[in-house]
Image 1 (spheres, rainbow, N blue to C red):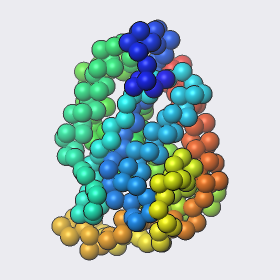
Image 2: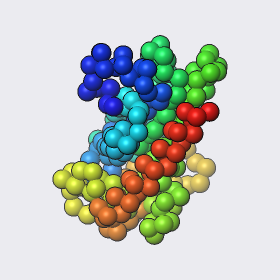
Image 3: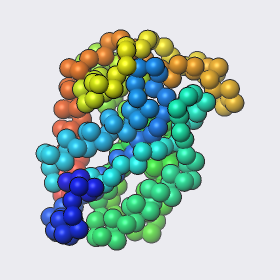
Amino acid sequence: MLVEEITSEEFEKAKSEIKTVIIPVGSIEAHGPHLPLATDLYTIYEVCKVLSQKIKILVAPPVYYGLCRSTYPLAGTISIKGELLKALIFNIISEFYRQNFRNFFILSGHAGGTHSAYLIDAAEAFLELHPEAKFFVANIYQLLIPFLKEIGIPERDSHAGEWEVSLIKYFKPHLVKGEGFEDYPDFPKFRVVADKKKYWPSGIWGNPLKASEKKGKILVERLVQFLIKEIKRMEEE
């Protein structure tokens, strides 16, 4: 069930039938010349919608914004501070907890390391106050890694490349503008640099030229199957 589409009465009924809430988190971020700025939101939210059709869960309205470091100087990237992201996620969790939910999946379509760390930190902070709550926190890239090899996508393909374009071609093909091009960032190892655009001007990390709707479909099917198992495992504990 999508929370944004149900009534208060339906929500009240869901509280007695559903154990798990999924909170989708995206970002508004440059994804090369070929993908929409909300790519990270679209991929994970559409996966959650498919998931909600196969298992009884509540899917919270998505959080569109995230923390974007590497693409920060690129046109269209609208980043929020990590402290704000953590506070927002903590607040959302608290509200669903107040409504008597205890199982939470925080799934992010944005795979930035710092962004992901703040999501984990929000869950950790909540557990300090409510240790009976249960959390699953992961970004889409982490979840897809086991399935990329199956269809011949290298693990280093991680942003606006083969797998991400494949997902958008599957979910929202009308939003893919051209084919893009293969490219990778060239950040100095262990360096934190001010001029990030110098080392990654394209916002592409992979090869979008190899993307296909078929690959997107396979990845979605594998990911949904995996998440169903994880949800059932948490609910059975």
